[in-house]
Length: 298
Image (tube, rainbow, N blue to C red; front, side, top):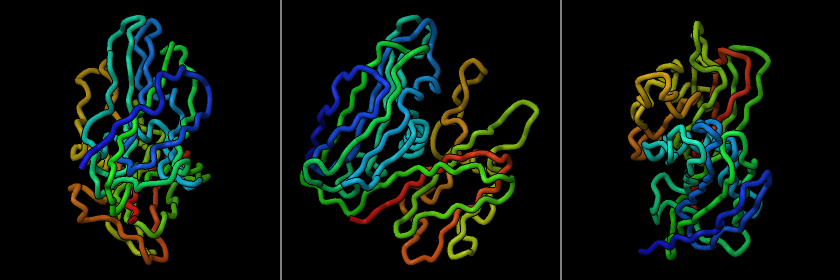
């Protein structure tokens, strides 16, 4: 087996734009999207730097294979790889060159010939980046993207990652979200707006349930703080000992995980079901981001 790593976007100057780029035709393991620039006076925060990449979308003949906001891509990287994405130069130094990279995966593990995106024809597979020009906390930015192909691979499945932006329901309490049917759901990431705060114990989502054919399945009733506590299985949760070292990342996120051991034992099977539902018990009437990671058979 071999792999082929190729740069497909080279030192593109940061701009406010929606930029499409055709992807290679060989089976695709993953992409590496990197933005680098220079500090403006002080250290730009992670949240500020992520904001320069609005959305990352990969489509096959117009059908979305991967579609995430940068914050949700960051959270998925933490979930899959047990590490935070690489952010260099974390120093309060004016004009310090820094970079932030996000991995765009097509399998739960990278370089896996059995789980990657299958071969396509020229022009069928497209990467689209919705970008904002670097300013305020970062300047003179450039974008680079590498693609890792697996020539000769014959994948059995690939990872599909999509984002639903759930509008504020107009009330607190249960909010039922219909989930896609037909594939195995590996996990979901719930990214809320209201998070831990001074003199407040209410999160945007207070409880979570999953239902299959209107019956409780897997997560009968889970408290959000306990789901957040289970992040210990995924990545280092102690980012720092003092406030100045920053919040635990990914912030505002919890995972509804059906692959806790990363061995495929507990996937949420949706094929042949009449309904699959995620019930979010809203503590606050607010919008919520829901990322869904599915395994699609080739």
